[in-house]
Length: 261
Ligand SMILES: NC(=O)c1ccc[n+]([C@@H]2O[C@H](COP(=O)([O-])OP(=O)(O)OC[C@H]3O[C@@H](n4cnc5c(N)ncnc54)[C@H](OP(=O)(O)O)[C@@H]3O)[C@@H](O)[C@H]2O)c1
Image (tube, rainbow, N blue to C red; front, side, top):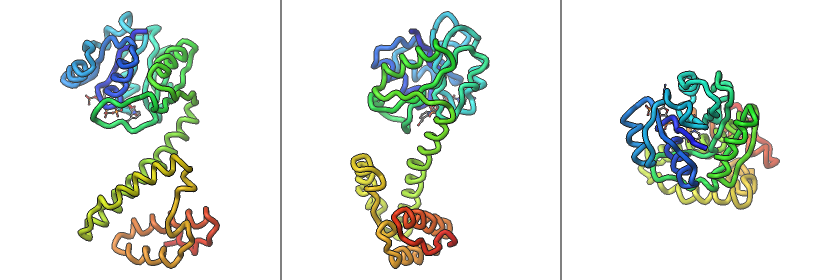
């Protein structure tokens, strides 16, 4: 199956490399910024291409552009029997209308600039609206990863929300906690070994088991003390209180009304 890559950002970079490594036939790359297209084309060792040439040239068009641009980009691709795929966990298949064969291939991982990732262990979620689209998206997904799951859009929305809760929020809280230390001339990197160990422990024994700290133990005195130290930052203090309340209740302790702080 010949695949044309549409987009030049982080997802295009990593998926492009993963597909090349798996020996899939990437026939070209295209995007709105010619400089970016040339750069990615050189990195991936594939020719730059034009969207208008896609029909006849590719059996699969893999659109890896910003969520808000998917519909416009899809509209500009001439209609054909090619399967058109996007890579967004937050977008439904209708964004790819009016193409008859539509699919999604969503890597459930944070893709950053840097070295190409090993995609074998990256969970991929797929979905499709026709048998042909299903066959082709599954073919790509299984060639680049050992972890392929099929989910509907409603299910994908839940995974997306869960990823935001479990990944984005802890990172934001880490950044805020590090700012707090830096404001008091304490090296923020002091938190990093525990942060890394926490993720490894959650993977090994489960998040509920791995959780420690005053709220889990029901050490209300310590929780109160922390709240007193956060009065300069009411927003962070409110977040601390709300999360402590949630943990206290989850582990069978009275929450002492911290949700009202
Ligand atoms: N990064 C992740 O962690 C990740 C993980 C899973 C899935 N995804 C999905 O992958 C897709 C791409 O994300 P990304 O992280 O690769 O984003 P990105 O690095 O910001 O790249 C965005 C790409 O979209 C192009 N683009 C933006 N607006 C456009 C428009 N109006 N018309 C044409 N092209 C446009 C950009 O072109 P220029 O080069 O000209 O700016 C660039 O090639 C998204 O649907 C995202 O949800 C991302």
